Length: 547
Image (tube, rainbow, N blue to C red; front, side, top):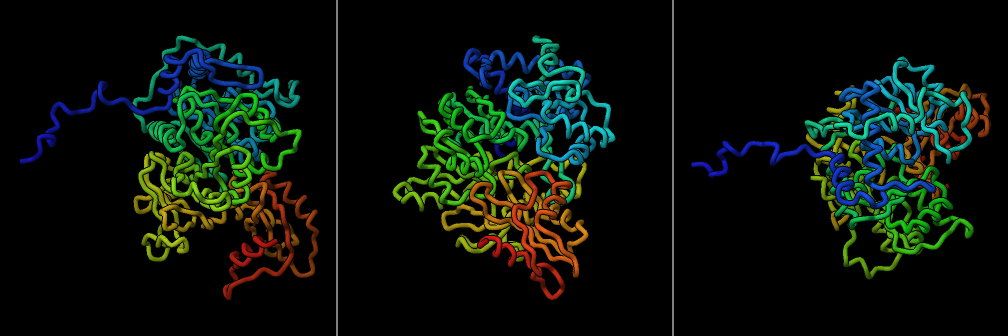
């Protein structure tokens, strides 16, 4: 006989015991319980959670009136200001898929994204009107509606030349109905967001998120970061990057206050931290370096303990040590666009409390262990397929499994299958496992350079350098940088009889690369090669580390 619970009659899913998970539900709960608490601060503007909810409902209604259908894409280019935050709820409430776009991208990549995503509605801060206009001239998809964000705190952008759409954002939101009967998703596997990678090999890939993963990312961040109700969160990490690590949803679930920051400037960050008594913020290691190196004039007193989450190229232990002394507690995390953001963290252990600052900082630079919402992490030897030894020495690839892994790459089934080979997501990052069971990244299979939190493809930069008529060979590797974490370092072998200066090459690169992709160091020399002519990048990496 089987167990009594093996019977299924009467134990089916029904509306009483099963509701699809979606981060939209956080907004509903918070506005019901804490309608008058401050939700968003931007400059002199303040909204309550009741006001934010109504704005999101009106926004969703306006999107539906504009013809948005379920599963269609709404793209947005915006800094971390209220419209970007509101889009993280309103687009989903309208049944759409939110595509937040990196503001630093060149026009040709923007055009590619508009076409590949099949954008139906585009929301653009007028500061970025010029590259968007260029992209619109190049892309095939020209039928989408455009909405302009007109922000008084933006640089001067007045005039018809900067106008893209036929309506501004505030007017668009006001045109929506406050009593719009929006619907939760029927299926938590429905697509919620579309995020493009930085194009580590050729064109960027479109990473598709689902409602379930976003919900669990928010819920897992709460115990993982040990956050209590009503935090005050400074939004430094770009919301265009992994949907701002999901913190828009996390802080909404906690009825927190989100302080928006248009510009990532050390003076602005210190002012916001001090004025608003910020308790939490997230950002790339470059943000930590900015705070350390800020002038006396830029610095402001911190009135309370501040908790910072950082990810990207691991910050040097010296940087972490200096930040800790400012009164900012650092949590090092690791993740990828494909994992909704952070999925590993350096969970602190009590036995480390007695260590000196330097030793503590070395531990905090590790990527650590899985967040509560992530099911599994392993580091696998690429030759044997077996887990690496816990010796802090043997290299292997980080592989991940859990509910905050993407649905897959949009329109790229082969790439998706390759990424999910053997039932694990293959990160492409090489790491060691310490005896403590904590992972630490040592290198990257794809030669990704992480500069200021942005991924830079060495292959893409090399491809541009190769186009110069004087260049015979080019190899680009990461050079450690205290401010940016890493910067591109280019090694150039010239064609016989050819000559070119560093300034000439940089000028050439500016015509083809975004600013953050530009080589910061260029060296001219014969490149080391194997017997078959393959460039020995490991030798160049070692040299770059000691420049």
